[in-house]
Amino acid sequence: MSGSNALYGDSEAGQPIIPRHVAIIMDGNNRWAKRQGLPGPAGHRAGVEAVRSVLRACRNHGVEVLTVFAFSSENWGRPVPEVRALLALLSRYLRSEVRALHKDNICLRFIGARSRFSPRLQRLMQQSELLTAGNTAATLVIAVDYGGQWDIARAARELARRVAAGQLQADDIDAELLDKHVSASDLPRPDLCIRTGGDARISNFMLWQFAYSELYFTNTLWPDFGELEFARALADYSRRERRFGLRDGADLAVSGERDA
Image 1: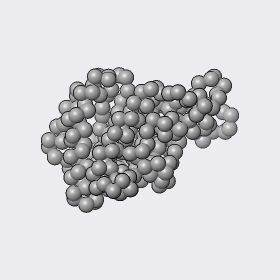
Image 2: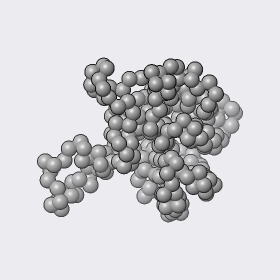
Image 3: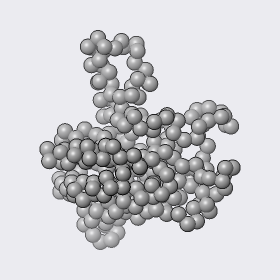
Image 4: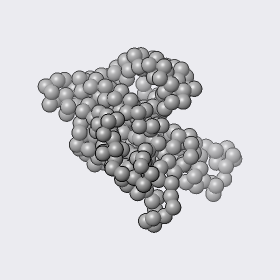
């Protein structure tokens, strides 16, 4: 991106520090639509364009994994027409975008419960994952019917089943073992969480995985969050020192503390 050095500032090596994994809470679609005098679904459609823009920016900057919070467990409580519009939009996205993602060598994955979705949407999700499973240029993770508390509880249930089956001792359960059972455990943890729309909270998103993630909050509404805004978030990240609970100046890997 032209002007990126000015955005990032100078670093000792002359290169910015790039997160391996960026997670985004995409907030502000409805407010954007209201400001434009449009119905709510128009904001969600505009939000899809922002996903395309940010995914392109990730590839340009060398970000390996992008995770987006598309539909939370709590979103089922929204008005029925809005829920239907969101799910229809997801279905259209899969039908129209997966071939392009595959052509660009991008792996598409989903995290979340899935069981409450229609059989047709579940098939689309599974087919999309199977088609792109071998792709290596980047990974797009879409969180749907997902909640951080659900994720931790699901991992705990799996470990409890193993204990009950005699495959595991309760005393063997520790943070490292539980970590292997949460969603996307094979991917590097998110280095950076971005939330658009002005709120400064993580809203039950990837609670376990965000243990040492850097948080970046912006007032920009999601449909207006493009490549320049993303570059600003990366620049802010690049200026931070990640210590993971250790002292200032400690010899640390500044990004992707878990090798993938």
